[in-house]
Length: 234
Ligand SMILES: Nc1ncnc2c1ncn2[C@@H]1O[C@H](COP(=O)(O)OP(=O)(O)O)[C@@H](O)[C@H]1O
Ligand SMILES: [Mg+2]
Image (spheres, rainbow, N blue to C red):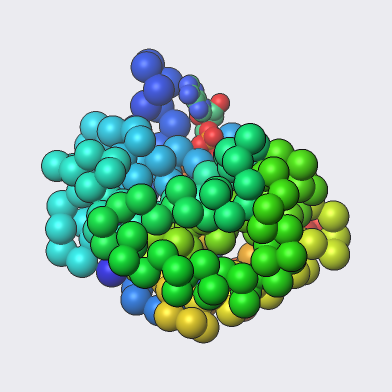
């Protein structure tokens, strides 16, 4: 579905991605794990075209993304849920969700998608009239993912959804990601929570200072000596 081939990217003079190769097949949960600053968010921003890579190729179902503007990437069905949630604090929960369905293909399904999001996140249904900014961190993360689902994603890009959440919410968020995938959405997840994200991943990549250093099934990487030592404190 998504093929990244030798992607390199620099912020000014500082190169932060080096020849990244990565594939996401339809139906998978693929996880990219790596420490803070490894280049996880930059990789997602390049896929979304919020940053423009200078060498390499990224294709989605055969379409070369290098020619597309960010809104055209969204129209292809690639939807990014950004790090730090970035919900609209002065809008209600329901208004935030509706903002996710501005693109033509999703407008049509707006009411059905609201119901779908409410069934995944009953808490959002209860709080639909509450202002987004007054929700807890975990609730805002649910809202950010819900808003992403409103756009009818074919590929959902999730940037550190568990960051800053209490342990109970963390467990809940990973269960929900698995459920969204079961409902037919392909997922590319980037995370610093290496244990939880490898547990739910079909396949995974380890990113270190802008390079893919290891790849395998989630289970293989959970049992890998380097991963255990570098990320799991074992
Ligand atoms: N807007 C930016 N301008 C300059 N450097 C940046 C910018 N955003 C990120 N970086 C740098 O790029 C590297 C990768 O960052 P990032 O992709 O955010 O990593 P991660 O998401 O894995 O924490 C880091 O060294 C970071 O400091
Ligand atoms: Mg990041």
